[in-house]
Length: 217
Image (cartoon, rainbow, N blue to C red; front, side, top):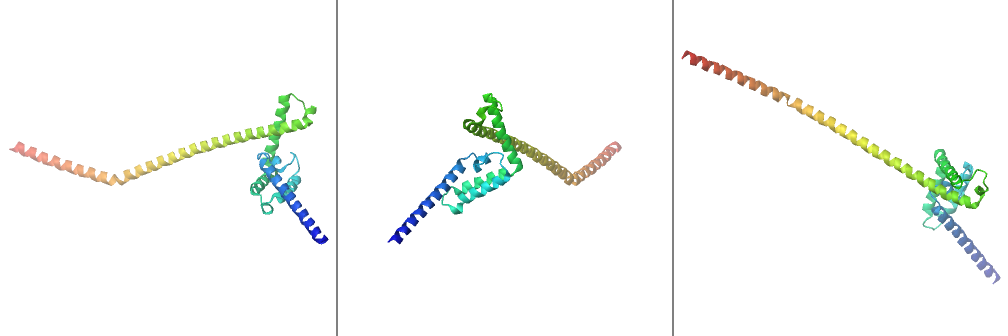
C-alpha cells in the first residue's frame, strides 16, 4: 500500500515537472514572438555588446528549450525561426554593426531630448533603460522605412532603365527589319526600273518612227 502511495506521489511529481516545463517553454515562445524582430538582442534576450560566444550559448540554450520537436506548442516553429534569424544577424558583422549604431543613436537622442549629459544619474535608472528600449524601436523602424524607400527607388530606377533598354532593343530590331525589307525589295525595284526604262526607250523609238513617217508623207 505504501509502495503504491509512493508511486502515485512520484507520478504526481513527474506530472507537475512536465507541466512546469511546458509552461516554461510556452512562456519563452511567447516572449520571443512578442520581442521586436528588428532588435536581435531583444529576441535572444541579450544585452548589446556581448561577445559572440555568449550569443552562441544563449541561442543553443533557448533553441533546445523551444525546439518544435520538443513541444506541442503550435507557435514553436515560428519562435524557433525568429531565434535563428536573430543569431544569424548578431553573428553577421555588418548587420550587428548597424544594430549597434541604431541603439547608440537612440541613446544619444534621449540624452539630447532630456538635456542630460553623459554623467547624469538618470542614465542608470530602469526608467531610462525602458525609454531607451522604446526609442531603439523607433529608430529601427525609421531605418527600416528608409531602407524600403531606397529599395523601392532602386527598383523603380531599374524598371525605368529596363524599359529604356527594351525600347532601344525594339528600335534596333525595327531598324534591322526595315533594312532587311529594303534589301529584299531591291531586286524588285531594279527589275521594275529596267522594265520602265525599256518601255520608255521603246516608246521613244516608235514616236520617232511615227514622226519621221509623218514628215515624209
